[in-house]
Each structure stands twice: as C-alpha cells, then as structure tokens.
Image (cartoon, rainbow, N blue to C red; front, side, top):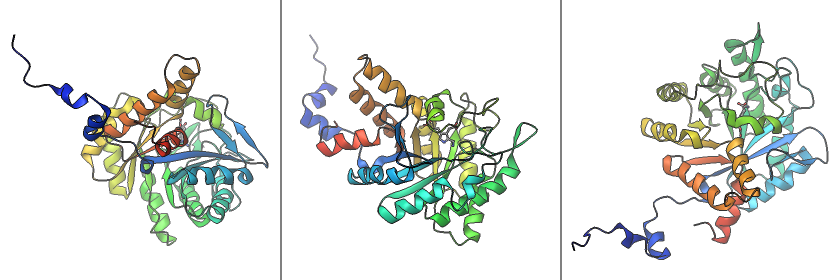
Length: 328
Ligand code: PBG
C-alpha cells in the first residue's frame, strides 16, 4: 500500500503543536464592550432578550465600566436611552443629554477606558427613525445638520471617538468638518460604513427602545444581498475622512469583512450584533449548543475574516476566559 506522504494531521496531534501553528488568536486588544445607559437613578435592569446585558442609570454605570476596565478591555461603546424623546431627537445634542452626562461621569471616574459614542437618532426620536422626517421619509441633508450638532456635543462632553451609525449619505464628511471647525481634529471617526438592514438587530431595539414606529430602515441601511455596494460605501467613507470602517452585522457578513479588509488600508471593525448574541445565549440555555465553544468559534471566525476589532456583547465573557487562560 502507498502511504500518504503529506500528512497535515502531524500538526494537530496535541495541544502544544496546535498552539504553535494557530493562525488566529482572540485577545483582549480586539474587544469593544457595548454599554447601555438610560435615564433615572439606581437602575440596573437586565434586557429580557439579551441575558447578561443590562441597562444602567448613569450613577450605576460607573461600577460596570470599572469592571470592564479591570478585565483589561480597552474600550466601550455607549448607547443612550433618554428621558424624553421628540420628533428630532434633541437630547442627542443637549449638554444635559443622557450621553453627555454619562461620558463626563465616566471620564471623571474611569479616565483610562476609551469611550466611543454611537452617533444616531433612533433611540431619541418618537418615531424611532435615524434622522429627521419629512413626509414620512428620513430627510438626509436635514439629518446631517443635526448630526453635526450631536457630534460636537459628544466631543465637548469628552468622548474619545465617535461612531455614526445612521447610514446617511455624507455623514462622515459632515461630522469631520464640524469636529474640525470646533477644534476637535484629534477625535477619530469610526464609521458604520457597511451597515445592513438586518433582522439581527431585534434584541438591540428592545434594549435601546429604538424600533421604528412605522416602516423599516431599508431606505438608509443596506440590502443584505449586496457586497459590491458595501465596498462603495466603505470607499466613500474613506474619502470623507473615516479613520476606521465598520461592517455590521458580522456573522452573516464574513465575506464583506474579508472584502473590506482587502479593499482598504483602514482598520476594520466588525459588530457582532444583538441577535447573534441572543441566538447563542438562547441555544446555550436550552442545552442545544455549548455556549462557550460557540462564542469562541464565532468570534474567532470574525477575526479570521479580517476584523481588527470586534464590538461584542460577549466582551466580558471572553475577557474572563482569556484572563484565566481558558480560551483556546
Ligand atoms: C443604531 C444602531 C443599531 C444598532 C447599533 N446602532 C440599531 C438599528 O440600526 O436599528 C444595533 C446593534 C445590535 O443589534 O447589537 N443606533
């Protein structure tokens, strides 16, 4: 009998050799932890559709942010739920807005965590859309004016980086020039460049109370069928001055992450979104999958596809395992 000459299994025979040839390793440096902050006091409430994820009032959020920092996670991304919503989402540019108050507090109490703010309107408007409505349609250029106010206000409160997520045309350029004019030229923009109109955002909309009151977001978020268009969006954001580009969601869009990575020299962020998290949590609870292993496999695949950083609700879970040396 003819023996195989080439035997890839030689490099899989035990954990030591597997460690040596492992190409992709998750690290604390990859992680951005989402944090939900809401109006009120003394509040720490679990999001029903996202076990392990909580909404905090500003006074309670500090302990959570300290925990994240102590685990060695470099950054958080903040989402706000205001006390009062209105037609245009004016809480987003108020000095006493939920994000502004929270960022000031975090920067005072936990100055060493890097604070990214989500720049959008859907959590702040009565209609739940990501901008200004005209005739039941999100008006792009009127929204840009409000985005500039929101961005400068976030910067004034001490945000380290801004992440516009509304998929308005020209949003990166508008925000960049507003920041520059206000002398915030050192604050980077992480653009949600290829953000798809995804059903995987369902649990987030519970968490952030941001579901649209009518219609959907398909006139601004991308059609999940399109990959070349995602590259177009990324290249436009690059020209407009984005410092980091994002693909969102991640798991059903690994091909997009890969193509974006090949097409640009900017760092690529991937957003492992709420539905991707909740599916794993739910199946894990039912005992149908091994939650820890699936979490590891999913996050590793996102990194392997090309993500330089990952926004994930698993950030703390992963960090605990990495710190214990238990994440293979
Ligand atoms: C918009 C925004 C959304 C998410 C992040 N920023 C929701 C949306 O577009 O409806 C979703 C994140 C997730 O599902 O985890 N501000």
